[in-house]
Image (cartoon, rainbow, N blue to C red):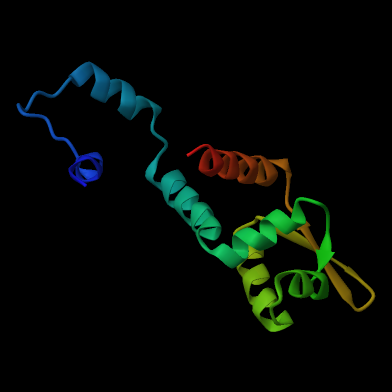
Length: 124
């Protein structure tokens, strides 16, 4: 118990010394406020289990709303709501064929981010 508690503690410096060379280097490599804000919004799309399941399903290729609803055991309305969020976040794109709308991942970056995130969790 004490060992687990220790692992969850955050260690702090015992003396206040700022290493300016490290601070300057870190500051020079950080993206600007606008980029970090956009990236934060981007990563929010991955924070919902249903959206994550939709994204991982689309790794295999495009699927229509009916396909995704059947796959996840959810209503088309609930899936459409999440797809709208993912589309606004530029993670998925849509294509209409007749009366059917198909969804796919926007690009290979999304698949790479998903694969790396899942691999990271599986290693833990």
